[in-house]
Amino acid sequence: GPVSRLETNRPLQKTLWLRGVLPRDATPVDFAYRIHSEIGHHCVGAKVQGRIVPLDYQLQNCDICQVMTSRKSSGPKRDWLDLVKTAHARHRIKSFLRRQAFDENVHAGHERLERAARAEHLEPKSILRHELLARLVPYHNWKTVDEVLAAIGYGDVSAERILEKLRAELRKQ
Image (cartoon, rainbow, N blue to C red; front, side):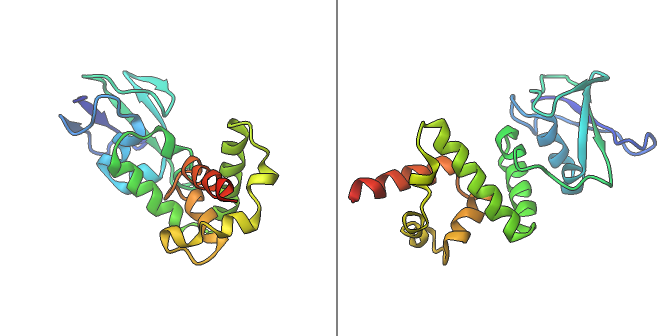
């Protein structure tokens, strides 16, 4: 696996070398979470071989990865769920997002579902009707439509999976 080095923006902090703990296509975000959840949560950027790289950069063998953190960071972004490769990082990000305001997750879930519907050339208004979404409530022991949307928002279930179930419900009509 990649041999990586962690530094934070405080230069005197520990430097750690990791061997064989990350999959081949791991990102700096995976690496940050591998070191510690708080470093992952406060990650704001990364450098590899001293050059700034995007957070979706795929670490290579022998890369030296410097994780930049900030206490002012508002925490992991929802779209990090799409770029991390390790279950560990995904779990930590989901836990953080789940703790965020329920309403924020409902709103984000609705937006993700709308985007997924548009990507499949479906009219969001026709497929995202409340009564149709209500039929999905029993699937995962949800209690309300908002819980379905919140689950999409914090990444517990994908918008695409819910869209699949909505299409199945439409076919039953």
